[in-house]
Amino acid sequence: MKRLNNRGFAISTLLYGLMIMSLLIVFALISNLGTNRQTSSSFVDKIEDELNRLSAANTEGVYVGGEVDSNGREYIAPSGGWYKIELWGASGGSGGSRGAYTSGTMYLEENEHIYFYVGQQGGNENSFNSGSSGGGATDVRLINGEWDNEESLLSRVMVAGGGGASGDGGSLVGYGTDAGTQSTGVFGRATSTTAGGGGYYGATGDGGGSSFIMGYAGVRVRDSVGVTQDTNKGFSIHKGDYDPVTGDKILEPYSAVIYNGFIVEGVNSGDGAFRIVKVSDNGKDNPPRDNSNTKLSQVKYIRDCVVSDGDETNMAYWLEIQAIQGGNNLARASGVQVTSSGGTLNNGNSIIDGIADQSSSMASMSGTGEKCVTVVLPSAQDLDEVAVWHRYGSSNYTIDHNLAVSTDGSNWRYIRNKSTDRNTDGQQNEIETSDGIRYNSFQYDVLGEIPDGNYYIFSADSNNQVLTAKDEHSSIIVNMQTFTGSDEQVWRVYKSGTKYRIENTKHQKVMNAPGSTVGTLVTLTDNSDSNVTQTFSISTLQNGYYTITSNSGRRLGYTSSEAELAMQNTNQNKMQRWKFVLASY
Image (cartoon, rainbow, N blue to C red; front, side, top):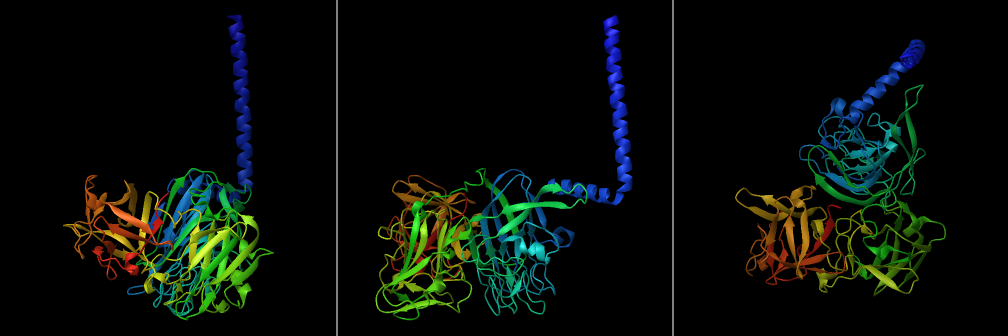
């Protein structure tokens, strides 16, 4: 018992000592709080706000207004990985033009903070994220604050341009009167006295705003000094830490690269919206689907050829060629050269000046036959994206365009070839927009078979309409609708023997083309492995587009905007050509 009593005494002494030390620490803290009450209170309030936001992270939403949107919707990454971000710009009011759509994948570490600013539909005197009566842009930032705060605007990494009264939100350039570009308009807002759309640069007239994706070929980042010809820059980001004295957020250096970027012009009506979803646990140096296509590995030479411009026989034009690696344009590096064949190249250096949003300075070449320019990098590099701009506008296209890359300048790998449709319409490429013609390592090889996957299916006749499963109550029809990114527009394409089945992911029914009568509508039915009318041949045209042919040999096509998909006689009509864009990872 004596040993037990001694041990009990020792334990009691230790406990009393710890209690006295705790009281001393509490008194010291109270004294410190009393002398720094304002700073400490501010710090505690900020921590409380942080915890409240963490418990209600925003993963999707539309414009609400008030306190909800005033300083951005905060998202705090719950874990490290790759996140797909989608943005829809707002339209320019009742009857106004539509906002743009942007998407891409971005790496976030656990507890990193980003902020969504959602555009308000036009019609108000000062629409949110526009500043005019046009539609507001929707964007994501690394630093929050009031929507028009300069520091916050400079931290934007993705923007979907808003529509104005007379023009849609666009890609690098908006549409309509005095639309925003990558370098002209008003940075981060439209002119307050107009009905222009907001954007990376907003309109100074009634046109739409421009869109932006960090590291996307053709964009021009702005820093604290002004606009540049660069596609990327350094940033700062908040990772949840605060200054223990001031309570201010601690910002850390951050490299923002968004991969597999995608822009669709003029698609959204109403208020803006956003969505973010984690798509991969891969590490920062391993973005999902990277090198799915290996043709851009070890590229030193990029050769772009056309026979002529669609509007001017025996003339060819080039605005810009870019080679993107890790969000940076290597075609602007020191030592890059431009060579040509097929004629005399005028103003060739403008092809690599980093300016794709202004057409005042273009390269040109005249002559009969094929005309080519080649961008020669200082050394062979693994590229993420190659992009080309010729001329863009309402009727600009090229004849017999082809694009190839090489390591040694002798052995060429075509990444886009002349169309196998050889009549007049077949030789024409799609009408070019400010988005240019793009090819990246995250997509499939367009010269080969379509790999199994989920796709949006675009028409060569429209840059913003896709095949859609539309519920008509008594039946589900397949027709062309303006792109929204909804499940009704996502199609699972997969091999069935030597052919393909095409299944709508929302309704989980497959396309069916019964019989062989021209004009018969394509329907959606339950899948039956023995039903051959549910199988289709999908054949590449070598130029980024494909044809879809029924089991009876009829091409699938349509006749006008929002028309239903039907079986047609085989021709080279652009309404029978389809581009498959990956919709999910």
